[in-house]
Image (tube, rainbow, N blue to C red; front, side, top):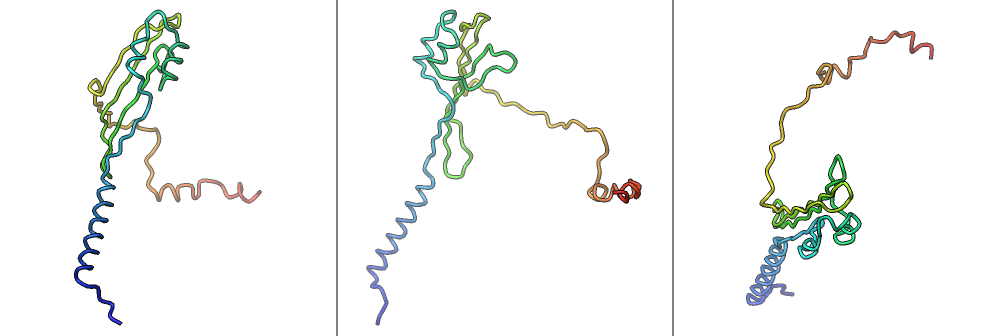
Length: 158
């Protein structure tokens, strides 16, 4: 029994396999767009009136804030961003919006500020380490450091 494939069919099979492989490869390179956070509609934000709307009104209009100011709850932040990732590469931030709503002492809106990706700043964290009290021990000092430190009678009476 002859199991050879005619040349014309072999070329067709190779072309089909090559096309299928290229399709799988290109599907892996598809853009992956992700939206995270709360990006309120600009029309709804434009309806917010300082001195008129309170916290309950804002929650009803925009939903819960992404975060609240740390020391006092006088500022609410709504943060959202869109990222795009190509295959295995690092995600790239395409759009970022931050809406800050400040409240006065009576709980009414004082002002609103909007920030975008262009308003962001790179920060350079300090690389120093805070020293801790005590000694730096090697692994051997840690393993054998307690040998002979305790009297044997402490363990014999138990």
